[in-house]
Image (cartoon, rainbow over all chains, first blue to last red; front, side, top):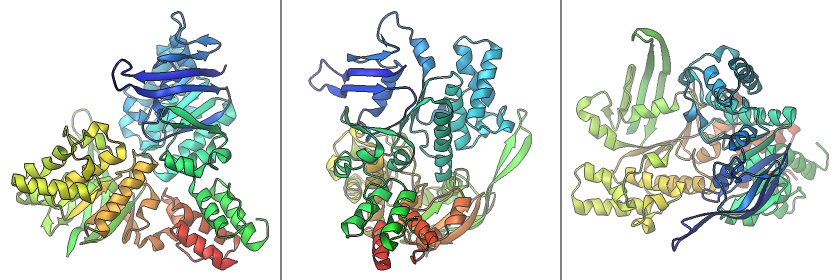
Length: 285
Length: 283
């Protein structure tokens, strides 16, 4: 079932002289099965936006619909919604609190009312999906590396078997290989289970490489909503919003400006290298 | 003179069970030798858990060596009488700006350090002004830190350290929590400190593009220094960096891919401008 945001606004300090429009008339359809990236500089409204997706915040005007129902309705079951829309915050390892990894991952499904056995099965399944090393299932969370903590935290949300997985900068603070490992894992989850992934990111490279749709937030509004290739044709506007374009795209455009026949819309290192090679040698690949 | 000199530095964590009996010893730093000369810009790279931050914490005596010696400004960090001199010689900036700012007003926050050192009031204000100017934040001096962006807060943190007149500034992943424009601001401020103010800079980071202008880079793995050299030397060796869970700057990566295909490009291209220039030569 899609999540639908219909003219959603979130205004803080509405009755004062300086109201803050954190979200300003945002309308979006987030269907099942997409891999979506959300970008925007700090304060653009992206974190406020994701908190509306599972009812942590309710709009001050406009509506959020899930399963055809308004999530702000008094008789709408928010607990049920949070089962379907899992949110992983920034630095989620700060939220690990149980004595060992397995107990921590079991907490969510148990809290949802599953039996001990069902919760444990869900936890095993989730830890397997995030490629968590078997020998560390009963390790203390303090013994884990940065990337392992991140996986454990994501598994805790996956164990509730959500249809939507929202990840707020899941790679912040990880080393380069750790970043790719987490994003490859998330990408595999998307491909294998068809789960909708919503990735909030500061990295244009990551968005270009992984997602199929980019939503660009700027001053509480949706500035662009399209494929990465389309969105990154708007280099100057993105620059003005404190964002940018992937470095590979930038280099291709610099070469194009120098009269070398490179495709200016390449997104990744591989695409850039292929296009530059073809332009310089006249050969493909 | 060497501002920082680590000689055969070893640091061990001892793990204990619930009764406090030692169960395991982890060697976080394993015979590290790093020397930093006055005015240098040094980059330190390494994956999570490689020992970079543990090394940084030795530079202002938050941690002490298990073996070996660390000299900062010629002083042994083990020398208790010199603790405050060591700390005012090497100033630290950390990842999260929100944990480092305490003042209600930007200029008060920056003045806190020198005031604490007992600097006379008139000189405190001079230092506040020059420090904020050095990081491009002078016009925000009367603002509340709460109203600033991440990049601006981090520049205020840097100014706070500068105001204590250190000889060397150590930054431990100062941009990890910032958005792209915040990162750019902070990196520009750090480069300015080194270029204009001749401040010795030690920058620990996971972003390869932040150290392409460094004088020298040290790469750490499992508590050891496993590579050292100029950025051009370090980033020429893509396979080794990948094995160390690291990356190379974007332009270097594209050049590497093109070389594999057979384009005659030189090793160690670091910036987009260099890459474009070299590709034009290939035509």
